[in-house]
Length: 176
Image (cartoon, rainbow, N blue to C red; front, side, top):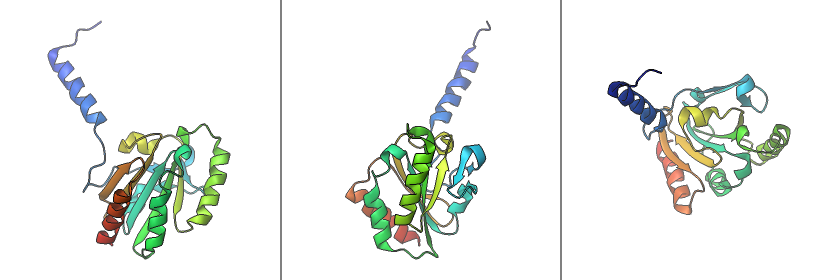
């Protein structure tokens, strides 16, 4: 077995620190992700790319199916705000790998939710691509908002408080 030198240990430590840092920072656009085929995609089977997060202010819910109702108050607040469709888009991306439920059951539930929120684009992530690429929380409910250029303007993992929802709505409104 080869000996590790102090230099190689230092390089390894830096690599581990950098790889564990969040890929998402306020004011920055996240790394590009593409969900298609075995990785996932829209409910209708078409691919989804994070490049779609440009052109409009976007709110993205990245959700463990077991936590699907955790941020319904935020979804309802966005629906009630009735932001103009020409300037606003919401996405529900489902972390399919984080649930014990079979994919067909999750997809059926998504189709029901699509009827409740018809303007939201629903996407399946079968392999935790966003967790791995963006380093967002797994097995949770993450809420992210992006400005028209695709830069992050709001991020929260877990249940949003009333104050968090107010901040989310303000961030969206300020960037329309």
